[in-house]
Length: 77
Image 1 (tube, helix red, strand yellow):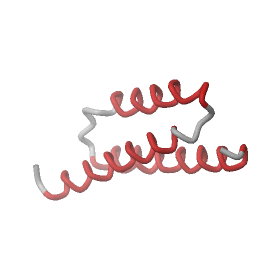
Image 2 (cartoon, rainbow, N blue to C red):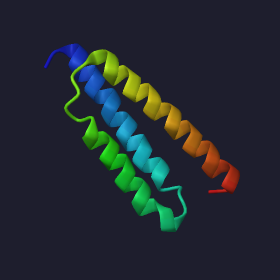
Image 3 (cartoon, rainbow, N blue to C red):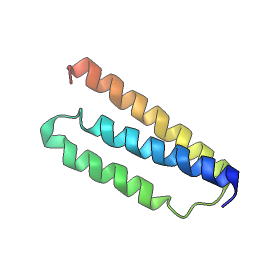
């Protein structure tokens, strides 16, 4: 694995961990489903090796997490 691939992998894992932490803030009845959805999305794109596509997916994931965090903040979670 070259340095660039290592850095990309680290960014993806960081996003995954952040998403799982954010899922902890969800209402109790929705946490399991949210964790399942996060895992499903990561698995679906696990074998992607196109750097441009990976950058897009990470960017999209960060945006979706931001929206989720804002929603939780408005609900008081």
